[in-house]
Length: 93
Image (cartoon, rainbow, N blue to C red; front, side, top):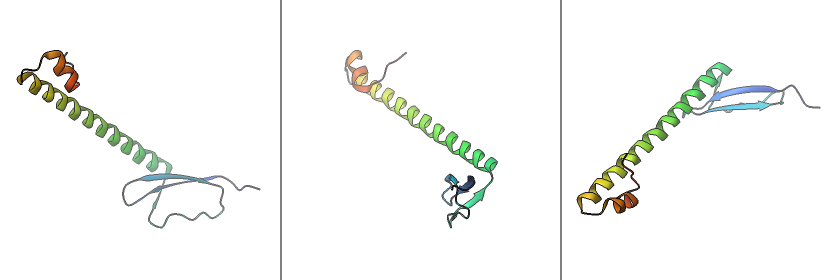
């Protein structure tokens, strides 16, 4: 017979968070984790997701800038526009 389901929320020293759903009557909590409330967990998780989204956007912006720089360098070297676009992956608007 299964016990009552319980949910625990943790934050680890490296800033990661974890949700644990268990039916154990006396679950073993990770020794290096801090117990969080559901609200704290949701706030920290949202902050982590926002930071990840910002990191992805920063990488995409950097890659776009590098493609544009490559395109400009190819044009400066006398490469035809269409070829410079293909080689650099850049499409001027």
